[in-house]
Image 1 (cartoon, helix red, strand yellow):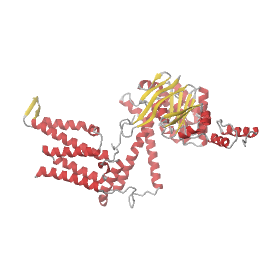
Image 2 (cartoon, rainbow over the protein chains, first blue to last red):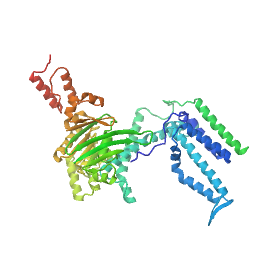
Image 3 (cartoon, rainbow over the protein chains, first blue to last red):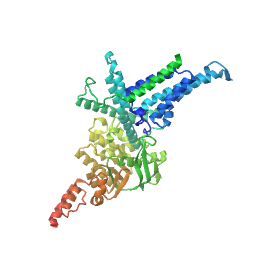
Image 4 (tube, rainbow over the protein chains, first blue to last red):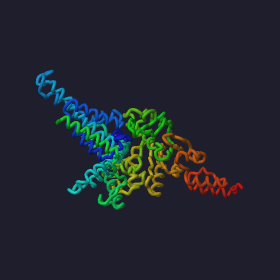
Length: 265
Length: 290
């Protein structure tokens, strides 16, 4: 019933991208996302395309993952394309009432859509190749410097880790309760909206009860292990930079520099 | 009248990196009136098998028929068959949700469209069956009961549907010895009085040997042994061992004695029978081989 929900999209693998340090991956992704906005000419778009394609090839993800990453946002993509195609002034190619398509519109629409697609595909690469736990670890490290101004980096990361850890558990629980109530003749898929809302009660009540129970148990377990926040805590897997991270960062910086140069020089 | 599986295969997470086949090409028929025990190591496919039996999950390939109706593919038939095949999940107390015990037990019968009088009748009967006094408990909140009592309410909720087949997935997990004995004797009584088919998934060999008339042993998604429990325990130690399970402790003790040269009968269902077997052996004086 709920088995087709994949969490955090992580696709396990051993590629160069999978092995990168999460901190580098997060920072490099952010830099390249900014760099995508530098691109305006066709030549610079070609470079962006090549770089995104290269990264995807390196990740060794199945090609259908490109489509999969775009799926949730296709409405926005179509809308963006439409707005640009129909509203850009210029040489009119086709007209019907107040609607007109211009040459410039098609050109703009194509570039904007491409930009959006690259943004989505490239940032999905980050979540495809990094497990949620490692990602959280990376975020905690990157937030560490902001601790001085009161950002509770460790607590935020811990909360994220716990949330991530329990999403599959709660999904499993939901599935189990759904099955158990279905076995007692409950129906979660038909009826009017109101009826369906009412039908959710046999699912939601036990789910909340169990979520609170789990939270309580977890708090007790953490306390029993003397957990008292991030101060002075060491980790089981220390993050460390390798030559790979240097190469990756250098590649992203070079591409960014080239794109910036093409824009402003 | 039976539940019949032919060539049933079930694979989880098809098309993802986590794809795993839990059940391979399984053929099995469960006849009316049987008390079937299902054992197997963790991850051997027991839970998958029982969920297929009542149509909660659809087999990836193969057919499932309950009393002649194919429930393998069509959801509508599967829905209709659910009041025939009752299912008690592991830790069923976590599915309780109503304000009162009576309302919770009434959930199943109400979903299957019974009249109010029938529902009340069923609730009373089910509560009586699991040993909860109707007058005392009907209007209490199920969340204020002890674990064992909550489980009884949950089991009563399934029994109130009056299924002809009752599937129980580890009904005694996490209960104390008294609680588990009570629950099993209730199930056994229901089986005997109503003549319903019981399918019991358990890790506990003692319970299986005491109760089941037929035993299915699962290993890595295959049914490796199928037969009378005492026969299997007496003759298939190696196959049981390979499947990651073992004979009941009492059978093990008797077989150890056999190994040491005592001609004891190891086909016993309970510790009492085991003691009797040893007693008979000693009295017969035909013990020592040397």
